[in-house]
Image 1 (spheres, rainbow, N blue to C red):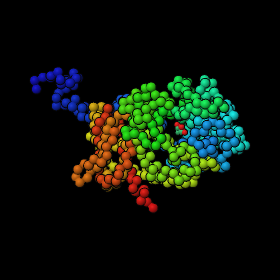
Image 2: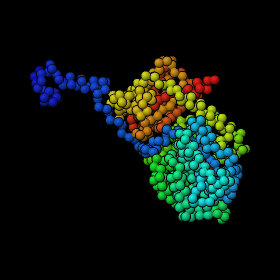
Image 3: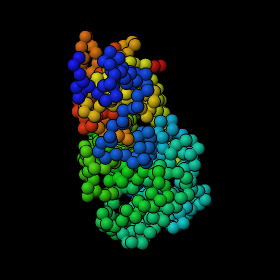
Image 4: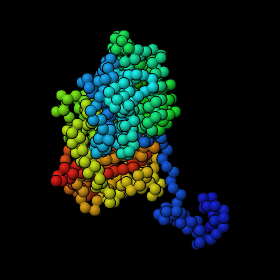
Length: 510
Ligand code: FUL
């Protein structure tokens, strides 16, 4: 060796004889560190696009909850009361909040949103601000409070409680005038102050114009955009129940899905371009699919009734959705990353009718059994790339042992593959994928393959993943290996779950 070149390393090492080559030893030790777990973690991927707020991060785990439509309409057989119904018509014979909440719970629903006041203006709680409420009804001699009983039953049974307070009020003489907004906000304060934690406040955009309006009996048109001055009302919710999400056609936290039939779009992005939208005005198609790369995070909520109407009507006793229909709704709402708000209308007793209860129980049982057994757990997970070769971003994180963990790739790797190898061939007909939501929706498209007859066979493809993408396959797939291919992504993928389930196995059980 004739001497040292500039590239030979730091001055201190250069002074040592080449036989010792301390530098190469040091490099080797450094390379070994990750495998023995001493390396500093690779940095987490930078978040991408619009991101969920803390309160929005609570939304996906709720999955599905119950809407409860109950008021004078239950007794007058209407869907929209005019506002002139005497308080005397509200008289449930055996109101049982625990029965309603228990039914929701057995159906696997995690909360209840009650119509504290629907468009007819009748209040299910003894509001200080009107005489048009339960306090002037014969029910419990005017001493009842449906909101209290429902909130208490929910909290007792471990469900969350939320309220629907119709902005349109066909009873009020001042509806359409500024005074009504004071009334509306006073009522909102009552509901948000006196009934414990509220998980969601539901703002309905509907307004049919005509009504009783304190005897005026006329059509009142309001400008949905300006009349309600929503930003002032929203502040009340933030002040009194900061963890509550607000629902409307246009958020601000959760958006309407654009139909009342029970399905989210495919895709259904959690992000939305809501420019120019407000409660009562939004494009249903866009609400249904969201906007890829949209500037705000506003996941969809699917509201649908178990019966044709929102309120109980005896003539609809034979038209209750079947377990199969409800399963389809589940896969096309929750399975597409939305939440499901399934309406269960109490009858004139003030209970969920027995026929509906039986269906809901079975629907709950089937889902509980399906999702109790993740057929992917125990598989060996490998990936074409792991971020910084750092075990904290390993492929095995998709198997769910640690819910906050996820598999991520290096920044420049946008289309990686992940393979699950099973100890024995797995048979499944449901695949569930999830992204690590705090980092945004990163994946644009994916495909899933099964190893069959010595080669990979694609059996599912999709676009949005987000909080979850649960695909129900037309027939069971049997395979020893499964491959998830991310085929397009806007930022390196961060996948928190690849899970497999079997609906067929549950249904064939006695
Ligand atoms: C609509 C209302 O007009 C219906 O009566 C029902 O409450 C539904 C959930 O929202 O806008």
